[in-house]
Length: 204
Image (cartoon, rainbow, N blue to C red; front, side, top):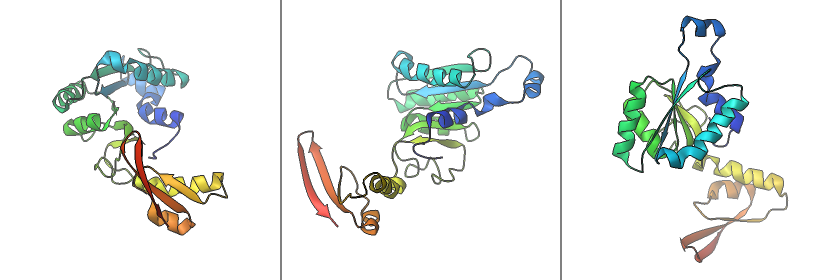
């Protein structure tokens, strides 16, 4: 798992069950893999993201109703509502659950430890305990992460590669102090309390 794997790679994880050998599929008669999706929003609000996901599957050669079925469940940001909907997906025996936020991941994990759960944008999967590490997630959770302290040093290295003469970098949140010292880059720690206010102090 990585925090910024490519779009096609992510879709490959979510659709891995769709690529079963043709012979195996014939043994399952008319059944096809079932994808469950859990969103902390009403289905109508989640429609653009769902359509983008389905378009990605079409790009990979899959067609809804032919190579997979899709079960969408959505509720406003309510842990109780998401938990109930996650339980519904598990009862339907979906082959994979796509969870769009931390709340959705938490709800899905409450009801299954065996069905694969694919995160689409967890904030800190290691810190929240969703995975053991980014390199080896373990368990039944994998997918994408928006950010992780483990990647701060790597991001700084990429900036340095893009801008070899880089000398000073401003971080809005939790600067990677140790990585900066190793690369001899001065960081500016910026605390933001309101949209138009900030304070900065240098960290060697």
